Amino acid sequence: MANILHQENHGAALAAPQVGLNKRIVVIDYMNEYRELINPQILESEGSQLDDEGCLSLPGLWGKVWRAKTVTITYKDRNGHEFIITRENEMARCLQHEIDHLNGILFIDHLQEGDLEDSSGRKIHVKKIQELSRNS
Image (cartoon, rainbow, N blue to C red):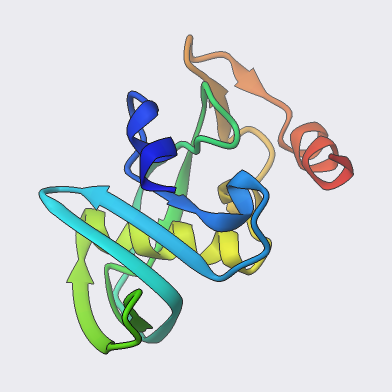
């Protein structure tokens, strides 16, 4: 998964379901932090933040998504060691985004009509994209 992530120019993280693996694994290489997370779970979250999100699964689409400002998660590494970490701001957003993937949720599922744009700033119909993503 790390090799696939590093092939993408703007990828910060990748969840196993994005590459057809039915596993609860996430690889993150973002903000000078590399982690392989097995079965990550959010233990606590607090605050809120609104910012743009995109996704390797929906290239060229962006939307403003509300996320918790701070999250504490638990996960195991590839050797079975358990970790608990707390992250805030952009890294908290990244963790929440990837854990959503493991739960079958895309960032567009958090959007309302009119909140999704393509890379040129043109508004995209969220409901149509949501329907397409469910049928693929």
